[in-house]
Length: 126
View (tube, one colour):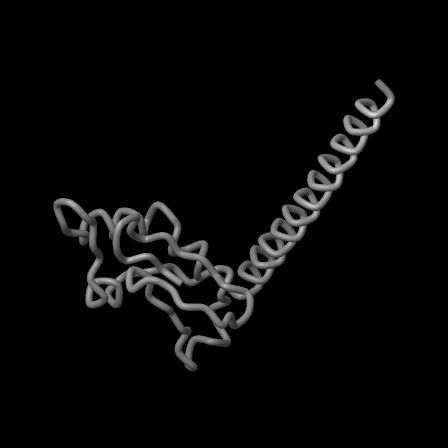
């Protein structure tokens, strides 16, 4: 997914198909078949969020009140394609990072529940 209106140029890889309705301000990107062996989705999202692409967004965007990036301009964005071995390494790091983030969120939620329980137990004793 890539934002084209409002906060322009934010890319995010959705890890699986989702049955959702999104805003018209979002465009869905698919990697063309001829690039599927040489461009990993995680790396595409990272490259689209890079300073090099950010400069292209700033050059192309329009709109006085609501910023807008035309689909025709999005199609013309130049990106770097890293060697596949490097992409795999980066992709693994990104996936590991998301896994650790999820784990930390779960641990924080569990800690909050325990603190709440302790506070409630202390209140009952008083």
